Length: 68
Image (cartoon, rainbow, N blue to C red; front, side):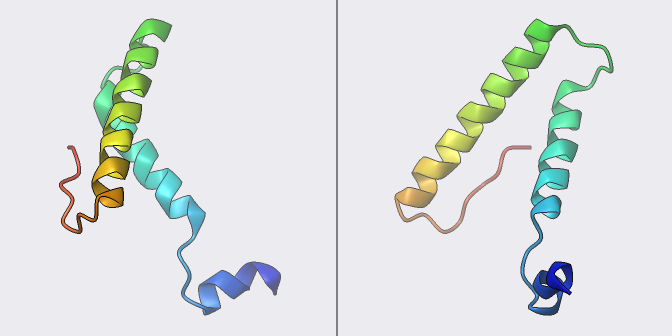
């Protein structure tokens, strides 16, 4: 019953956030067998975008444009 509590209380499930991030990240990488350096570049870009979003949210912005 413990695992149903978030569903019954209409709480957001963590898995949805992870699936959303994974889908967006997969679209960023495009190729199936990238080098480790390309992976690092994409992870750094993703981190920079997330840091910019955090700064916007902490500054009180409510309408955030998420990168595509």
